[in-house]
Image (cartoon, rainbow, N blue to C red; front, side, top):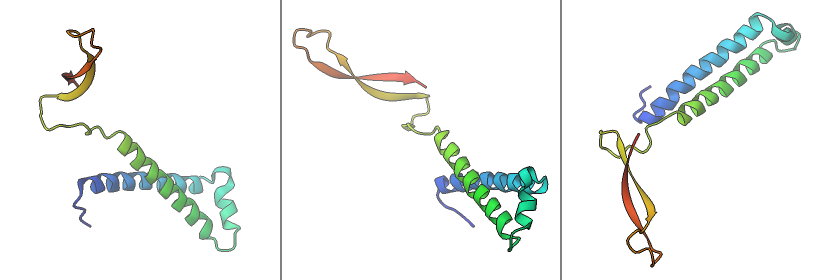
Amino acid sequence: MHLKSPMLRFLFGHGVIGGGAGIAIAISLLVFDVAGLASLSMKSEPTWLGPFLLCFSFFASFSALAMGAAVMSYDDYGNDGDDDGTTVQHRIVPDTQNSESGRAERAVIRVRK
């Protein structure tokens, strides 16, 4: 599978990592019989349904958690193209020369990242 969009590749990679971690945790809960999960699921009529639902819910939850954390920690926003480590921001500052007019003008301020 070849994803052309870099953002989709970014999300897919983090989703697979999170889903794998979720399945590993769910299987370890079943193997070590934490809180009697494995013995309880073996008593149900279709014995595969309980472990499948547990693994699937852990897969979905952990992959969504990993993708959400990846998006929130993605810090490439605000890149204006110049590679000198500065961004251009516009801020309204008070006019110091015509203080009696009460006007405000826009000024360009360079800010270090």
